[in-house]
Length: 234
Image (cartoon, rainbow, N blue to C red):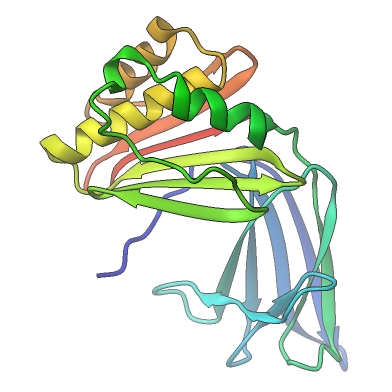
């Protein structure tokens, strides 16, 4: 069953139009999402839409469900701006380029991993949280346990964003979710009572909140029929 992730937060919006022979064929717009994410929306009558980052392989944009002629691409911001080129053909003969703005890193992967794995909050001593490898690679990495997903976005060996999701909360998955968030708070220099307050606020049905602790933003919601989603960024 396909899960749709609701990404929280919208700020700056940019848009470009691509024309050919005087007729508009493709519109590309970009907006900041969840603080460290960047979403492209492409409107095109073409059967497929493609995108690429310089030096990387060409990828196909995803069709937006229930919206004819609309596609989307979900990206992460990096510590420096970078360009993404979009086209309605694999040869990129007609294309539009958009710049993804930079974001501030939370901390290095080394600074993050040691407190997360070695100095957990007292609430996580039973080990029921998402365990991580000894090293983290650049790009997006997703780790799962008991129905909980932890996605880390890394650029230049620095954590630029984190997303924790629990789409089907039950007793076991809720424990893993709470404990994982607790460990993240420890890693990002939050005091135990501060991160526990975040967990308590998030657990209220239908609640949405945005809170900054030790310079780090915690942006979360308990979406009805969706589940718990918490995004963390600088």
